[in-house]
Structure formats: C-alpha cells, structure tokens
Length: 506
Image 1: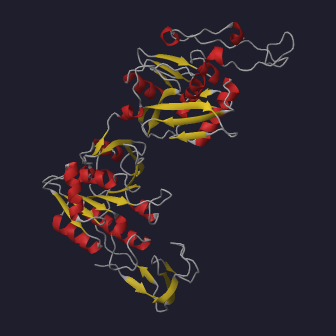
Image 2: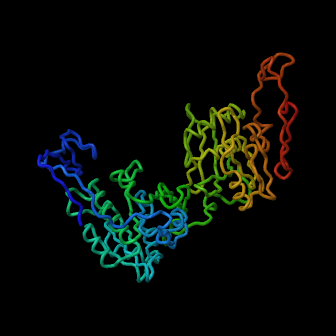
Image 3: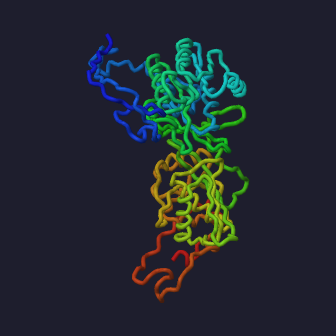
C-alpha cells in the first residue's frame, strides 16, 4: 500500500532556481544553493503536502539478530587500495574517488575493474568522458582485459540504469559522476541538481542490489570535489587521489570511510605500462650514494599509519642580491623560515647573506613536524660543507626556543629505519623501545643535535660577546648555572670527528 498524502486546499506560490533547480518558498535575488544572481523565478503554485505513515519494507529487529555476513568486504585485487578501503569493497557500498586531471584515476579504476571481475561478480565500467574504443586502447596498454568486464559509453542516467539491469554487475565503475545527466531535470551535466539526482539514483540501485559502486569525481581549482557538498555526505567512502604529475608517486588517502579507518594511505607508482601498488615505497624518496654528501639528511615520516624514510636536501650559496632567496620544494615555506631562524639564533649558524634552497627527493611532500630536525641538520651540514653519515636518521620537532620535541610513533619510525639498514638515529628524549642493534642518541635541543655534524664546532662557533670578569661570555651576571652534560655519542658515529674543546663545553 502506498503512503497516503494529504493535500491542503490552499496552495502557495513556489520559486525555483533555473540554474540548479533549487526550490524556495519565496523570491530572493541570489540562489542560496549555487550562489547565482537573478536565476530564481516563480513557476506556479505548489500544494502543501504532508505524508502519513505507510508500510515498511522490512520489520525492525534487534541489532544482534542482523546478519553481518552480507556486509563482508571483498578484495578489489589491488592490495594498496584494499588497505585504504579497510579490507576491500563492501557489497552495496558507494565510493567516491576524486583527484586532479591526469593523476591516474581512470587508469587505476580500469585496472581494478579487470582484477575484480569474476564469473560470479561481473564488473560494469561506464565511461561518460571517453568512447568505448579509447578505453579499450588503455586496457590493452595496461593489460586490463577480462571476459567478465563489461564496457559501456553513456551520458544518460536512464541508459546507465538500463545497463545495470541487463548486466547485473557486482561492481559498477562510473567515470565520472559529473558527466552523467538525467533527462527528467533541466540543466547541464555536472550541475548541482544533476549531480544530486545521479548520485541518489545510483546509491539506491547499489543498496537494493548489493552492488558496490565506484564513482569518479572531478575537483575544482581549489582542490575541492566539484558539485554540491551533499555528494560527500551521501556516499559511504570518500578517497582523495594525490600526486605530482611530474613524479611517479601517487597516494590515495581516506577522507571518509564508514567501514574502516581514515588514517591509511595507499602508495602507487605510475609508469607507461599502467599503475602498480608499492608495498615498500621508501626507496622512491632516497638517493643511493657511495659517499655521503653535505646538505642531506634522512628522516622518517608517517603517511597515515605507514612510516616512510625520506631524504631532505639543503643548499646554501652566497647571495648576489640584497634580499637572499629562500626557495622550497616539497616543504612548507613558513615552516622552513621558522627552522632557519631557530638554527641561526640557537645553533650559531650564520644564514643572513646566503641563498638557501631546500627540497625533498622523489616528489614527496613533507608537512609533518617530525622532519624539522632533519631540515635543521641538512642546513647546518650545507653551511659547513661537511656531510652527515649515510647510516643516520633524524626525527624530531624543533620549537622556537630551540628545544627538540617528541613526535608520535617514534618506535614505528625507528623500526622502519632499522629495517632499511640504518644503524644510528637522533631523536627527542624518551624515545621508548629501541630496535635491537640500533644506536639512538637523545637530543633535547638544537645545540646538542648540531654537535653531530663533524667539523662544525671548529668552523662556525657562536659569537661570544665580552662579559664581566668572572662571568662566562654570553651570560648575564647572577644567572650562572652548571653546564649541561654532553651526551656520549657512539664511537662509530663520531669516528674521525673533532672533539669539543673546553671553551665550547663551558
């Protein structure tokens, strides 16, 4: 029995935006949905409707009696994508994958479509941006052919639903949701009303059939998903596909996930033959050298729960202009400016008339504060042209007072560095359990950390101002205190390095 609808006798005028289809009870100059001016028009009187109680599709039952086996995740055939999804695709789940043009969304999903297709679970790949022949050429190039993979090129929502009825797939991939339109609504494809209608229809079909759905979403120039914000609320999972088009690395991050955590990251490598998952991507961020080079330092960053060893590089040259350059690549400029100020003020390294260039290796972007100590060591190493050991990693956040602060996951970072063969580490105090065979040096401030650079103490001492007799240089009267103990560094790390003299110990 259909739900009963009561209609009052007194109608009232209604208004609708001709741009996005948003309905309003009164006229306004600007549409509150799409922010377009002068598009709200009256289109007739709409009766006021109230809905009475109707029949239910299934009776409510205690949650303990609900069968959870029907929502068991099924692998996509791509382990790195399964990691981000929380184990795989849940039947009936709708996933939105968004990314910039050319990042590799279509290539990845075509590979997923071929690997997930079986005789029991067919895959339907619907493209609204390319022809079927163009998709076939890409499938030949990346070897993504399967007899259980069905391909269709459509831009009408009714035709897409018709293909779903005919194929009855277990997985639907739609590329992209902004290119499909419904004939029942006015407006061009990609408009807020069209995106809302297309997403709503596909979500209903997915839930009714237990069909997993992967939707490709466009992004704006600001990096936001194009279309109404409601789209992100309707779907079950939102994934962000990131990567520099000039680098091989691609990352998938979970923004929203109803079936798993959002702190997992999937790593992929894009090449001519397609896109492949990287179970151990740390090698992309390192430069293998036979001899150490000045101005480089290694650190361990966390991408989600995954520790990655990355290399930070710094180069300092005499400036030829009144205002020295400060150029960064893969690092945040405000963070670099803060670290340079701390190194100069609390480390005694003169940087005022130097052009300073800092960068990462492999196109990785480091935004985590744990890379502060490695950046400071790289800058100081470049200033004295003295290299750091190849087997050393530096982990820690640097504060404005020169202190080295703790960061999360130090034990996981050290375990990853030890697995890759690194034997020494500079870390903040109290690092926790240290991997067997790894020698860890705890540093509490930037001064102690900079002592790890060979030859720096003799070449760039902090300037000592004159002081009254009986008072050490650089210290005000009445504020004398005992010198802090100098940590004992491992012999292997300090081999061939100059010892501290008595003046510096004071």
